[in-house]
Length: 78
Image (cartoon, rainbow, N blue to C red):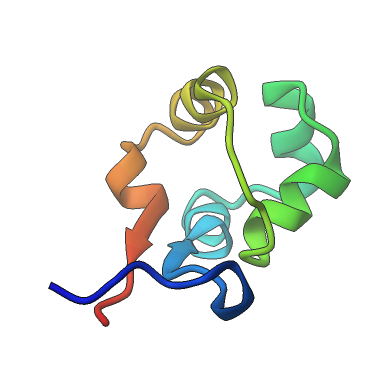
């Protein structure tokens, strides 16, 4: 098993918020209003720059998008 990536190398977790929003015909602003998270924070998440996600935020996103965490995020292979 390979060692974990260093912070300088980034992470392999990818967010699929763009695809989910398009499939549901939602804007980032509309999602922001539904989940109570700023559009700036959702944009950080959408662009794979987030370092952490609260479970409460993840739950709200999954509820609003009618998806599972596995549909919202994936981990790229090494």
